[in-house]
Amino acid sequence: MRALVAGNWKMNGLAASLAELGALKQALAKTPAACDVLVCPPATLIAQAALLLEEGHVKDAFALGGQDCHAQPSGAFTGDLSAEMLKDAGASYVIVGHSERRQYHGESDGDVAAKARAAWRAGLRAIICLGETDAQRDDGAHHHICSSQLEGSVPEGATPENTVIAYEPVWAIGTGKTPTGEDIAAMHAHIRGCLVRRLGEGARGIAILYGGSVKPDNAREILNLPEVGGALVGGASLKSADFLNVIGAVNPS
Image (cartoon, rainbow, N blue to C red; front, side, top):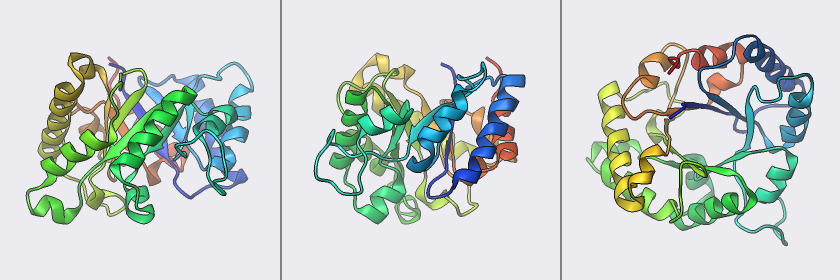
């Protein structure tokens, strides 16, 4: 399984930020990564980023993704974007069910599953996020919460080709806190077991990313833990130099 390192820019980035993607492209052209690389900029930049990637002969240096999509292909949904629109703009992935969408927009597991199916419909690979809060971990409910979210958010038909899972302990996102390596490995093993029970042996090929304050100084330790198939990176993906340090922490297979 080839690792995936994905950068989620969240609500950050203007046209000038494309310079960071240009620097990322040049660096990966010079020294190809030992993993697949994905950048999910704000939707306003996807089409411009796709054009940037078309220039020269390294268009496959990294892939582009959206940060969310609507479940419907079109309609009277002011302000929303369909998976088909993201695909048309140049995306090949889309993040669904990020904890910030669940928390601030009240998205349910059912909403997330519908968006994952929409991603598949449009030919996008869905990155389905799940994870527990600090209180839920303190209560010892973290395994149950992640199992429940997986059951409700991952539709039948998920395969390694159309789906990635991202485990993001909510309490570690943007806080500087990071679970211990033992905690991360245990949760990833738990998620793997849940996937296999739900979807069968083919689910052993579905990548499980870790997302939660991944930075250059902790990336190598995290990315080499059992069942960690890559990382979903937040703030450290905004600067090409930092992101490249995370990408470089993946050991060649």
